[in-house]
Length: 420
Ligand SMILES: [Zn+2]
Image (cartoon, rainbow, N blue to C red; front, side, top):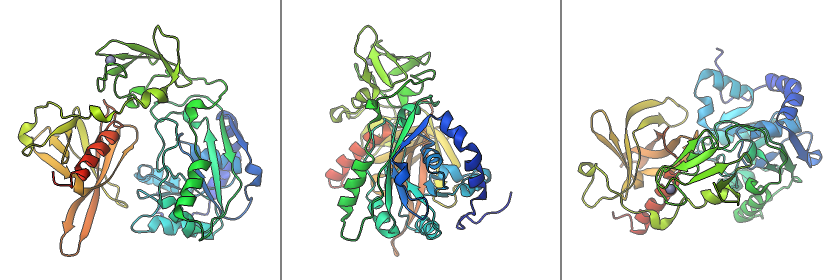
C-alpha cells in the first residue's frame, strides 16, 4: 500500500479512466437523466451545491458532467487505508463536521483544488436526509461561498430518495433526474441570509411527491422502523415491527400497514395510501416527552429525570480527526436525562456522564449510530478544550429518534438557565 499525503491534490488519471469506461453503463444502470447541464462551464472551477438523499449522489453528478469533482466526505470513508487511497484518488477528502473546520484543513484543500481549476461539490444539508425532504442549510455554506469566490451551480436531484431512501437497507431501480441551474456568482454585497435563502430554494425537494415512472425492487418496508420509530396509533416507542419486508405491524395495538415501493403506506383494510413522510411527521410530539420509569435510580443525581432509555447498545470512542481510530468502550444502556446523556456499562456497572454543556454537536450516521461530539478534557488556564466523538451504536432500535428527544430535552435545560 503506497503512502499518500492526504493534503496533496491527486492527478486524477484513475478517476478519468474510470469515468471514461463506466460513464455510459452507470448512466443506464441508474436511469439517470439531466436537464440544463449544457450551460454548466466545460472548463474551470465552480462550486456545485445539491440536495442529498442517495448514497451515490456524488457519482450521479459526476456521470452527467463527465469531469472529476472534488467532494468532502464523512470520516467513515477514510477509516481504512484501502478506502482512504480509493477516496483520495477519486478526489474525496475528509470533512470535519461542517465545512469550516477549526483546523481549516479541509478549507485549504478546497481552495487548492479550485486553484487547479477543478469543480467542487458540497451538500449543504450536512448529511443525507432521512425522509426525502431537503433539510435546513448550514449557515457555514454562505461563508464557504464567499471564501471560494467561484460561480455556484445548484443541482436539484429528484427521484434520488425514492431510488434509495436512507432508512432502507437496499437500493431500488428508479429514474433519477438532475436539474442544473444557471451558474450564479455572489459578491460581497450579498448577505449570508440572502445566499442561504437562495440555496434553500434552489435545492428544495420533497421526493415523496415527485412524479415518477416505474420503481422496481423488493421488500419496501425493510428498514422502515428506523424512520417510523413509534406506532402512529397507540404511540408505543419501537412498537412497530416489519413482517416479510412488506408489512409493518404494531406489537401493542396489533394494527397493520402495508408499504409499497413508491414510499407510500396504508392501514390494512383502509383505502387511502399516504406518503411515508406524513407518518414520519407524526413521530415526534412535544407533549409526549415525559419522565419515564426505569431501574437505574442509583446512578442518578437528586431529582434527575430520565426521558429516553436505550436497549443494550455499544459505545465506541472516536478521537477527533485526523486520527479516526475507533475504540470500543463497552456495552450498556444509554439514558437521556435532564442533565445530559448517561451511559451505564453492562460489564462493570460503572457509568460515563456527558453533561449537556460538554456536548457541542449531535448527529446520526450510518443508519444505526447516534453520535455526539464532546469535550472530554479542558485546561482551565488556557481555555483549551480537547474534543472526541462518542458513538452509540444501536442495531436493534432507531438511532434517529434520539435526535428530536435530545434536542427537546437539551432545549428545556437551556431554557431553565442551565441550572439543572
Ligand atoms: Zn400501536
